[in-house]
Length: 425
Ligand code: AMP
Ligand code: GLY
Image 1 (tube, rainbow, N blue to C red):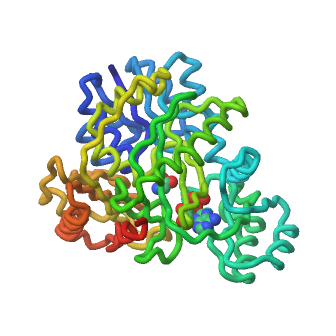
Image 2 (image 1 turned 90 degrees about the vertical axis):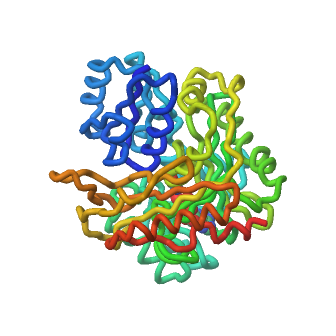
Image 3 (image 1 turned 120 degrees about the horizontal axis):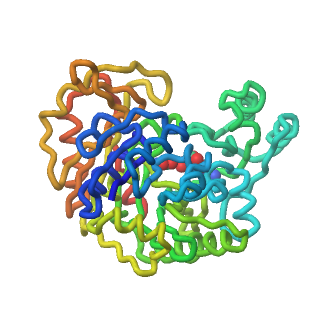
């Protein structure tokens, strides 16, 4: 089969890497890809939101199957458009993608269908939002309802700070239309867990549970990012929690989707907060998480392409997913300054010193090649250094050895990825 992957992050590098090894894959393309993906796929320089050019390319190359990585094209309905021209594609349709594109929709959906989530109010009117925050208990969480690449959520401790956030979102429109409507919700203190499941409309298969690290600084301080590191499975988690997540969150969500006549086929990412054994839904995403995807794919034993095709063909009830019985951990190296402003295009020199093997792999995000074929850092998140081992602490140690050997000067990374693992006991 001829396969096309859309996207350019560490997630898409991990997906390309696994798909390129599938016996079903005869030729792999990636639009637009990055300097790492080039090793396993032919990268094509087309804007991911330019559907007409993508369509022409698909027809010219006679692509059989498309895998959509990021949320934007999903929310813009790329899967519906591909299906219209009889191309099979992995990812939910536009209608189902609202679970990620509107936090306001998701909160109402949870409330209506008794899916546990933090108490909330939503506002389109600035004056009403301001008057609401005068009389509530802090901390609170203010969220832009629309897509914001992980930058639209603010944990706020004081009234003055809340006023500033609301002004920025609703009056100054710092996040454009995404902040036109805001959700203000109770702050939940607990442990975050990511539960990604494959869903084919009716059947679902949960993947290994993982944990992301959203804040830029150690001990979860500073602003939110797209994710600074992740690991899976969760080594100390009590066994009953997985069942609780299935019964209290995933199954009710799938039933609710059915009731609302929303056909969901793809990855349902449930971002969860575990508060003293009670589980709350924080957010849904409609795609693989980045960086969660990197350690997950690194532990996958089964043929990823076959699994994704089975999902699109509604055959998850006949699909078994096998995992390597190890732990995988990813540390994300970012350009210094991210998630704010950062310098672009500096060379990452030592990548060739790192010997990649079955246990260690560097997935690329924001990288390109310059005119002299040097690998340069062009994005905020740049490298996902990933290792696996039967022992969680060894996996962690190995990742940091690689990170240090890279000696990439303009980078920043968190030194404590995995530190919360024991808190999940
Ligand atoms: P979201 O985009 O809704 O997943 O929010 C991004 C991050 O903000 C989450 O991963 C949490 O770390 C944090 N967060 C969101 N909502 C809450 C909440 N109600 N209580 C505590 N932290 C939250
Ligand atoms: N790692 C968080 C996300 O992909 O949204």
